[in-house]
Image 1 (spheres, rainbow, N blue to C red):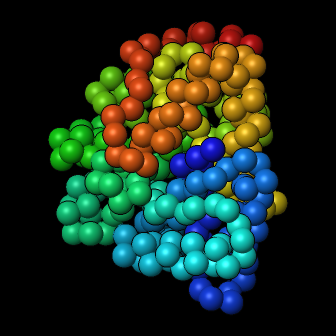
Image 2: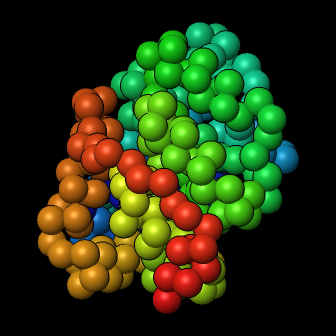
Length: 255
């Protein structure tokens, strides 16, 4: 099982406490059936600044440490970048890292409570440059929940989205859970990932989310999400169904 969005790479230095936490996170993921993890350290979020070069170096170190500990999990490079207006330039100058360094997909995080005025233009610019943005955890963005038509427009344009496993299972609250399931039923998301931050805090619930998706929507939906995770790390085109608009009144009365 592939986990395409996991903060397993907070700060990897030999002998450092952060390395031990990363190893524990990998062991926990392995126990839950995960074989491959895309490390997605924060970038341009408050004090977090993790460039492409730094991430590639740290991923190599972590994979060496995992092999030494006999943990059968492979770490691939990724990056969760907070949205800013010059992201295309960031790709060209080597600051930003596409998923698995394939040059095709880029994880983009929006602020929690707003959609910046330049967000649509930035998504368009990325697409025009040949890089597909993947909006991470849109279900947790209050403005998107209030304006689901914006997300529909982005997906219709070619942007992808990724749900957090804990949102689907209800660990972020009822409203976020409801909206997550609406995004699934309206073909407004293409992936599920753990967005794990630690062993105890925000741990890996990917397997739990897949079980719930299978129970509600069937095995086919789960398999599409899993296959898309494989396709994104290989830089291939995804399985995408025609998006549908979400009506606000339906969101308020879904459950």
